[in-house]
Image (cartoon, rainbow, N blue to C red):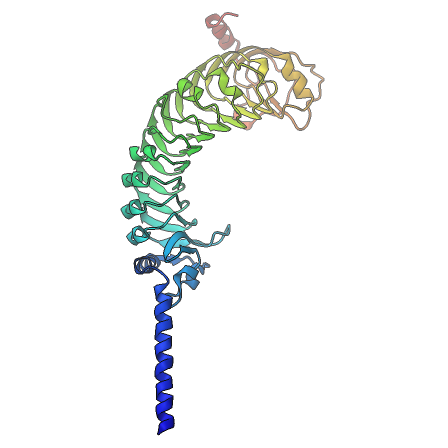
Length: 404
């Protein structure tokens, strides 16, 4: 009997210890954060082939879950989904409970099939510095309340189904460094950005309209892509301020006017201005050291500057350039220093090159459809058409409007 009582007391003590240990386990994380993680988990699911949520067993410490990082009893970072390239992502919605993680500084979801709107409650995360939900199916508008996140540095909502305008409040974020909203259905104009630390602005493949105000883009920008939109107007004054740029893509818009000559002195590695409505002459102020310059499919005119002869890949085709091709181009072409020189569909009248000259196999030259018979015949892009020379009537008409 005494032995049974002893066993009973021992079992009671063991049970009490187990209960207390479990209480300690659950007490590791703040109760509000614990409940928020449960709600977030219920709203999201692994796509076939993914087992990201396998470790999310709420009988254990959530701070040990995959993608959950804690500081003391609060969740400070939530990275949902397996980040390895090519791994399946998640599906479902972002639950509004995300706004309960009051200490959250970083929130990301890997590419997958997460759909629905971005919860307004994200704007409650006053400590949030990094928000990235790209390559999913997030829809609706960008909440204007994201402007409340005064510590936000990176906002990446690229490759989604977002529509509506970019809220003006986003432009007021004082710490914003990276804004990536490309490949959505965003409309309206480009807002003014006040952050003096903004280095990357990627808004390509949207439906943006209107013009760029001279002060809308901060001089801190290093990467700017506004390609594949419907933007218009002059960019001369706006670009003149951006002398820190190392990448610039304004292609496939409706920009007009001239481009500043000093843009070619910026530390740019890739300059994409093709398929706009730019006009006027192109006059660099110094030898151009940008590896790739694409000014094709515009209405630039005048003579081609010899300062472009140091460009490795130069696209000047489908413009209104006149006169002879500078001799410095020929020298560098034959030395294989120029890899691509596309001059087709202009009003050029000659190039001083020996018809028997051997163009290096590593170089591509196209002179088709100008006011001359090309002295050398080299393969041109298929879209250049079959006509070798521009009709004499067009050349005479252009010469009448633009006397030498």
